Length: 152
Image (cartoon, rainbow, N blue to C red; front, side, top):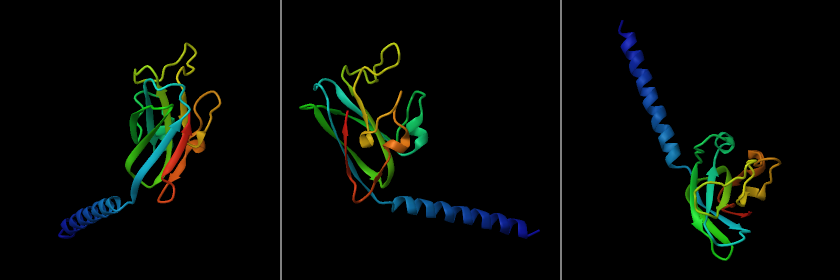
């Protein structure tokens, strides 16, 4: 009869220790700032909209709203811009971006669904009949690779 409370107590302690060890390991994960330089704009109107993805599931999601790992927007000057993702854990990522020329915060498309605004992906990956696959756009962000360039 006394074994059951001891067993329950052991399971609770094990759960707390496991939770604590996961928290500690997450807190000690190395991070850095990822700088993304984007060029190829035809003008300085509007903004760059940029999103950072850390999984194929989020990257390939076609339903709204798309929820990236991180996102931002930047002004364009002299047909180029730079965006810095701060305190990003080292790991595997992919970037999508587009020139929101009219400032409506969405990628404008024609009646066939073809984008009317310029766009780009990490590794300058190109897709056939749509965005490139995640495998084509991924890169490893670490202490040696902290800057990427995209031409839209």
